[in-house]
Image (cartoon, one colour):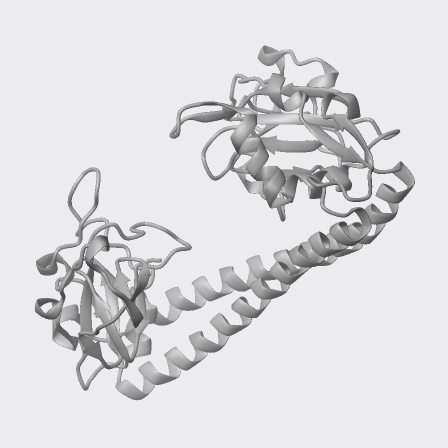
Length: 378
């Protein structure tokens, strides 16, 4: 059905003139949320608004993101600074419906600025949205809310499984930093049969070559095969040792926020290598199980140690030092105990993989539903 397209200023009242920014040093802590472009910035002792409103990022928002919204709902007593537009819906518009429309709205043609993108008020008011009758808006919002709730539950399940893995680890081995159980200590190079940063292969546009795993492929809960790149095997001339094998531990080795993230290759990949942003660690199975190693690397104090002691570079451009990392000491319990832990975690990982696939399908269906019902690009 073709619905009427209206400008945002036709269905909302802009309350930007009521916003008041407060410098961080001037804020007095209190009970009321202080909102900016991307949500709560803190809590202060006073408020400006006391109603249901929609906030839309003005500058510093997640413009262009497919996962982080640029619009969110607020209700009750709160304060809003000048980095978020404040919108109150008119009688012809459902607030939750408008929120769904604007969460991932493509504002690329409306924003300006280079280093800090800005959606100013005049541009914001030109946003066009489909506006069906009010009862249909309410129905659409209810359907999307229900779908969003299912997605949130699935994410919570995955998070709980991550926490379960850490709890099992601590119960079986104790704190890996303090080592209260007195386990043997070995360096990373002592528990490895192969440890190397990848190379930069000659990339290819055809599928006759091999595959390259980069840092955009490696997450704690999954390896994203869709992000693999192609490379020319003939030109690159890799030795067999460079190709990833089932059981290899892959570690992101560059970038603040991504460095140190690791996962295990759980299945054989044909003619697949890692690039120079990834470290490949092949464990010696006499001393170490890959599931054990992944979980010890995921332990936050170990991550903190890696960032503090085993990286090179400045704040914005850091990389894992292979030489320093190879000398990092970790606890190494008996391999039989590690394998017992691995058998438990493999079952957890299998279930988590099932949930992750389900989550991906749910998110794709949600986006498709948004596109079909709201007729906007997300």
